[in-house]
Amino acid sequence: MASLRDIKNRISSTTKMKQITKAMEMVSASKLNKAEQNVKSFVPYSEKMEEVVGSIANGNTDAQHPMLQKRDVKKTGYIVITSDRGLAGAYNSSVLRNVFRTINERHNSSDEYTVVAIGRIGYEFFKKRDMPIAKSIIGLADQPDFAEIKELASETVQMFTDEEIDELNIYYNHYVSAISQEVTSKKILPITDIEGKAGMSGSQYEYEPDQEQILKVLLPQYAESLIYGALLDGKASEHAARRTAMNSASDNAEDIIDDLSLSYNRARQAAITQEITEIIGGVAALE
Image (cartoon, rainbow, N blue to C red; front, side, top):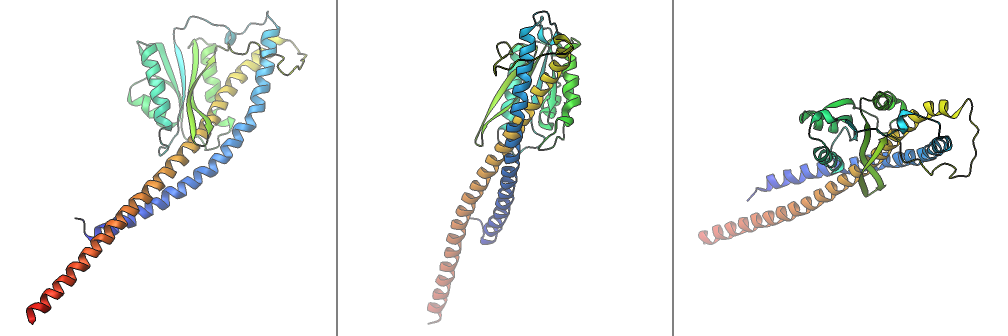
């Protein structure tokens, strides 16, 4: 049986750990509030961009752009959004397990795909398995600005335009609520899901100089906005997952402290009883 000193030391160390996890939970809760605001603020821009692009693409059958055209898929690109740090429960493992399974099912050779890793966890995961990584970025802020990923997003979209890849998919954790996040995959390129979204608001647009020239500018920006929107969504999910994980860790620490306190009291009571028994036995021997 552990000594009273050992049990007391364990109670002390567990209490300190609980204080740390509780503080981390509060920090994550604060970051989550800001991340939720970022996601909500980005939605109007994303919807308006989608509406305008849909209006042009659907309203002008003569407009052509490589990003709107399907082609035989010889090589697929995967953007994978993870965090730079752990202690976030199943946040990283869920999305990595999903994309890893998809790659193994769809491809027989590493020449058939490449990965764009956003986040240290994902980068190290693919690097350890010798999977091709075309581009990566780590060390993003908890509330990232578009400027931080503009170069990566632009170069990734350009890979499709230059036909280095024939399809671009993105995998990330979609923020549902503070206690729920879902692994989500979307096809970024080619753009095939904007049909029927023109005129959703009833707005009419006049274009100058012409629709095809505007498409050349807007389509890359639209694809980049999809990547940035997924990143904001993923960051909100990360903070929510970390808050939940730290809350569970604090609750588990409290349970351990209760169990250790009970063991400590029992051991202390047994020690006191033993001392009393020895004293009574000594007194009886002297009589």
